Length: 264
Image (tube, rainbow, N blue to C red; front, side):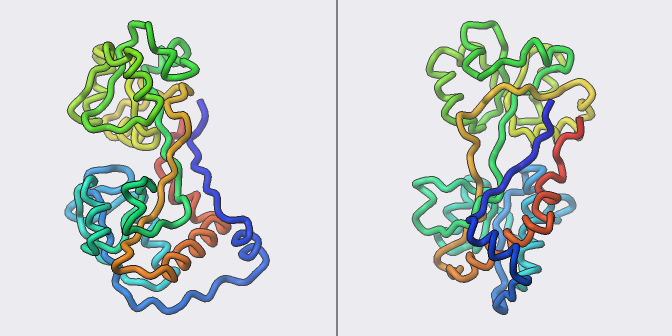
């Protein structure tokens, strides 16, 4: 199986400038930025002993150290993050999609990563269930697991509309899905790839469950750092983008975002 690697794309002009110039001198930052984060979304954003943890928070810390901004953290339910930014109740949030609903009231950075979904199955069935696409599960008896409130993209919606919902079992949460698979109540389940492997490590099932190459999304969804237009200037967003480019060039960005990539 392929190792999950996240690719990042920045404007060529910025990259060329960075490659052939000295390190950017960032303007002095006088703001203390309020970072909205979800405390229940490992490995990206979560809490241990009331301390914010995760890939996204490590990333924003590295960026703001380069720029010189101070940070405080505000724990916000995932479905409220965009609204809090629009109202100015928080300044920054990470891993948000740029949707029609989100565009008004928010600035966005360059892409920080692309969401990648996978079909997880028992290792012994990895070849048998390595379907080309999610749509190839139609008209089969494959029992597919999803999580309550999960978002799986347009291809999944097409799968459901064409009758795939008949064989879907919805779990209360992501942690329940590996257990249902091991007890043979499912043939496989859908989950964001990196999150899936993080949870398998937590429940000690890495030796028994793996992901297939089945295409789950038509196009992986790009995710961004989002900023409140009420409290953050465009110039700060430009500095964040410049810091991201520097981190891509020196390897820091890849190291952070692949911290929990599967080691198979």
